[in-house]
Length: 357
Length: 253
Image (cartoon, rainbow over all chains, first blue to last red; front, side, top):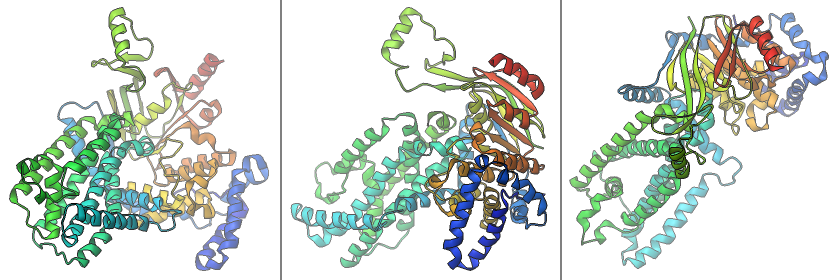
């Protein structure tokens, strides 16, 4: 049996019964809430208040043994029992292959805690808008304004029809914003979760998932703008295998990027400024603002920029322009290299992360 | 059967920040042959490290209540974190059998912006519980902590006592077999301490092993059956409370 939840003062006993009624009758909330508030505050001051309320808990606990035991928790017990034999934590310095195995185990445990990672990311977004008036719509509005103004200006500069350029630009900018936030937020993946890392042992991949989810949800804010632009200009995606394939590749790659810069950012505090300037350069070198068919001389070198095939597989697919097989090939090749590097780095450094943050 | 086995545990922290690695120091060290003293050491890649724990060994059986005692900086918190699996050993081995409940950080590993209820939910998800079980945990913690309508307010509006009650209630609600607590938790008032003691003793099948760190002799006397006296990251004395505590107090005075 769990202990009888001991009450700390008699008045609180009454209040709790009162609280059950609140659930049924919400109009009583204001009054009772104030009372409960007072009770909570009082119990803080029990030590100062002396024996009068300090001794009450024992009395209340033993005088009312038939008080409904909230701590019976049949479901909790059943679930903990169902989790199998007690977990064993066996930690030794890692040698050789153990790095890889432990990193894989970390990923597996992280997958099992998918709901936790999702919830953490979701709550981050929710917290961002606490106390803001328009909430998430600020993002949508600012994206719309940016796309609208830049679209008109650059269409004129590049001598492209607005009908062609605006959908291209809106899609590119939103995708680039997702990539950019993945890199910049990724740097702080572990450093920002330092409190959590130092408080409980948790798979590190959960922190990576949290940031990936957060970035994804932020990205969803701007998807509405793309949808509206596409509808206005009648752009239809090519419906074939390329849609799920490109989405999946983006998903796993964004995760890998977060992992990579997260580990690096935990060790070297100068990664955020370095990555910011690298992304700045890539932004102008990669066809984000300008269409890839504007370049003639040296277009064979464009595939050397890893961002180009990565961007093109999803942009081409969704905008209904054919994506060359060479671009797909390079995108897959770059993804494999990215995963290889991120995974090895993570495997090597996983056990040290808690020491660094 | 819960159990804790620690053998030859050594933990050292790398010093990357500050001027520990500056070129000048490296050169002058090489030229003058100056040795780093005390708890500073250099690893095989010439990095300066701080020894937080050196060669710690002990094992605990079900029913053991271990107190870690020592001055600030003796390595108590680091040892607790190593037991919780947060710092993986640099040398040696840590083996913990059983579900671990931790009460380590003052921030409790909770998000101060989120409400008590949301934090409980997160912890429930961490233990892989279903919504139904999480609701039970929520009720249990709510009853124990007596936070009333504060449950739905952000943690940052809580008084420190309320924060302690919530985190203690939460750490014990999920029925840990090994409960690891740091001394800040002693910030609770007298009535809370009594209820906390009651709750822990109620978890007979739950918290089979308790490890707490403190520098308050009264706490140790009341709560612990065994003491580990630490100094400079090493174990000075290990034994039953009534033997170690007088020795410790004598050395301190």
